[in-house]
Length: 386
Image (cartoon, rainbow, N blue to C red):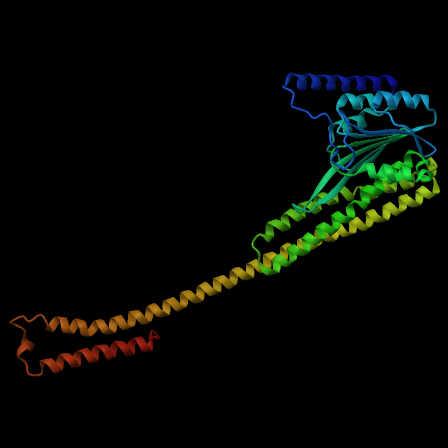
């Protein structure tokens, strides 16, 4: 890209930042604290987005600028030094300032401003732009929190832009400063350390998700009605995990392919290959989770269907028994109704009834009742109602 086109792109980004700042200025400002606590556990940062900035020479810190402008000035005064600047959710003017100072590509700068990018590795001339998705497991809600991290790596500088709570880059900085022989290898060593921290951070997340899956498996076989929803939530977490980890394999392959071309230190090559092995191990475990959850969902659907069939069978048997009881009650009701009908007719005591004066009238009525009741009993017995 020509210098004129790059300047036009930067001017467009600055204009966009100014318009956004005017919109924000028109709104009533919220109450802001005097310091901004860093959610990853680092020391509270002063107002602004710079969490930590340092200049290094031969793997040792030689300066700690407190602002971006101070960092630019000190870097110009320290030829051969490396600047490592960490930012947390910077605003557009700050990113535009970094782009102008370190000659960042406008496309990479646009991705850093907008965020919500997939993990990727882009090379713009001598500058690498890396997007990572860090993860951490939250014990209380039993869910995975994903955070986006952008890294610019170029000759003599490393810029990290975090858009979430993870990872804890202060630990990475302390680790690198405690091993100056590794830090003096340059910006590529810092990139390795960040990649290693992000990938190692996946291990406790994988363990947490695996534990959740085991608990859900117990719920499946215990017949918990809420397990289907839990399996769905875990499937979404695993899918998001796959989106965060799968692109890392080709990214590291791209870095490996450039070892010879860019003269990467041999020891650093070994470290990066170790990170690649951890990534493949994580990807395999996460893929296994996806299959396991799919099987669990199938098993749960089968168990639910079996339970429903058992319930339907029980309802059918109960209905059958109820019908049999109704048949028996109806049969005895009909049998008892017959003598009542005969007795009611002969109990009307009308004057003109032929049987009233008959000597055998009473025995005949009793006999008629017995015959009707016996006949009904035999009929119901033959039909299985009694």
